[in-house]
Length: 425
Ligand code: AMP
Ligand code: GLY
Image (cartoon, rainbow, N blue to C red; front, side, top):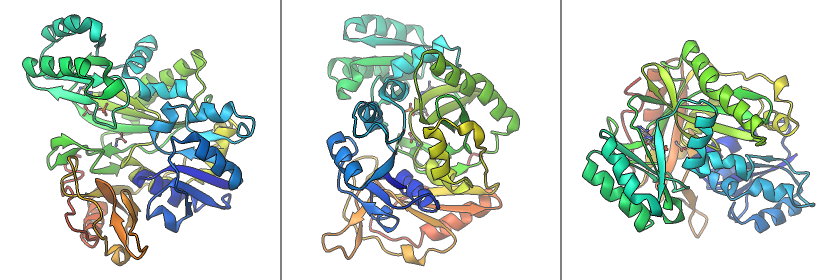
């Protein structure tokens, strides 16, 4: 079958790499893709949120499955768009419909859902412009640090953690009155700060059945020892030692099962990945966020460990027969380090020529923000996160050593990366 994969990051390169290995695949198209995905299929110059252009491509290239990488098209309803179009409704979309994607698209919706279904999460309240005074009063009732979250999608930047009450009140007020995150901060969630180690858990569901994929840990801060501003993610490892069988049983019982049952009970048909952003408090998992997609750079560590045929798994999602599948996982550790542009996560440089990828041996190179130069002769940087290097090793130390060896071979001006991925595990 021909598959169209939407997105352009390291996650999509890793998915494309996996899909391309399937004997069930005929042709792979990636929209818009990057310089890395171009070696695995055909990049199409269209934006995933331009549903009309996606439809044209699906019909032009006889696509029989669409796999959605990022959240925006899902939250904007690409799955619903397919279901309501007579020409497209036979084409399965891997990624939830709009209502289900609200688990990521609205923090307030996600919090209410968790409360309704008894899923452990930080206590919280939601405020809007008409309830700023109550919000300030609520901040007075909490102890520092303070967690403020823009309700809607804010490209990973919508969470602010404030050390002092003064700062929290000022940020909270500006989020609501100045719409700091546009429409995303028309509502703001204030929640209890949870202290603990974070874990990313991924589930693939067909709405009835689910499979748990390998877990991963993401390193979000720009600086070593988890310091400095948040980024999209500077590296990842999978598996995560503290997430042993006993811990994962807790996650399944206390978080995954009530989520899947809650969706079914509310007749929310979810077909795709659910990403549980967890924080472990005294050995118990709490949900800090849901995402309606895979994580990036977690995917770059998780997908190389997955031994199943991914097209087969996606077909089972479409036919709601995931109950017939089991996940098969490479027991080795995967370690990913993200090479980023100087300046990131602030304003960063672009257009730097990237060399040295050909010299990499023993690691996988997944492109994130890359494209071709105008002449087509060079691969150049085109984003804050540029390239992810992933290795598999018998131990985390071995995987990281290989990754760092190869990370140094990839060269572009202003290349930065964290040298301490996995330091806390
Ligand atoms: P999110 O954008 O929801 O992934 O949140 C970004 C980061 O903020 C998370 O990865 C956590 O490190 C942190 N965070 C979010 N909610 C909380 C919370 N309730 N307590 C402590 N840290 C949090
Ligand atoms: N790495 C975290 C995310 O994809 O949201």
